[in-house]
Length: 330
Image 1: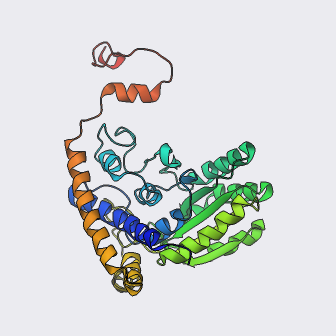
Image 2: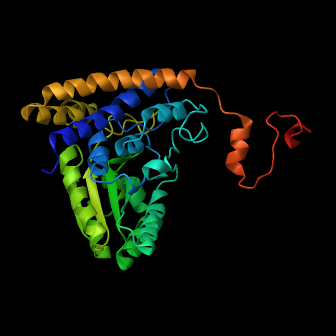
Image 3: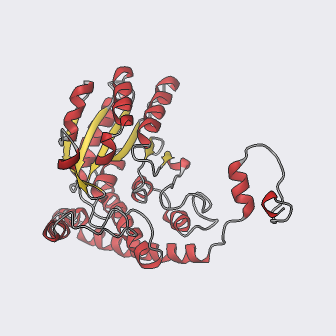
């Protein structure tokens, strides 16, 4: 294992930040697709990246910027739709991005990040940089045409892209077993002549090691890797989505919460390595940080009309801040 103790605590802290960020959302501003239960796959992968490496996320997007190390205060303000948000309140829960962290963006379009990450990989190759591009996507995206198109292009041109499938077993309510002719997603790599890796997504260090190997291949010019991280979402597809049918057993959910929570599992690992006090300190600090983030978001100003116009137009046309004179008021 290649993580020093300080980096182990950082891995644990980032998982905690995702969990407590989303628990704060549930308590104060319930919106969005939550990553609770999937923190190990997200953070394990991001810890293998450099600051300047690219990441694309999914519509389950809160965890990816936090996993990459982004500041949680503007992220929380974005969830609240405030001007201090990372996208000035214009992106919201499903369209977070932070280009300063290498985050290209998230999209509500299933599989939408696959061609973006591939294009970023092409840019890296053209510029002769040693960056990599990591694409998070869900099991539902594997049946989109963009999956095959992107992996095929990356394989042919040996682009430095890591395709990481967060396979949580369900696309809304449909299980992988019912929607995939080949439910072992990592085996689809064989059709493109690239490595396919299966890893336990609840084991953050296992995901880190698998991603680190893929990153090393990509930086060396050896092309892409497909990683399937078997993980699980503890909550519904969206916390505003009322599911009228029973599509998974309560015992299954309870098992993952009790025995396969990535944060609980990693805390036990840290305790076994003599780092329990550091883990406790990280949890206390993270709790305080989320309280600060909620205060910051609630006290931040609302977006202004000019923010919307500035985001729509790149030419230097002056628009009045007030509504008067606008065509919709004619």
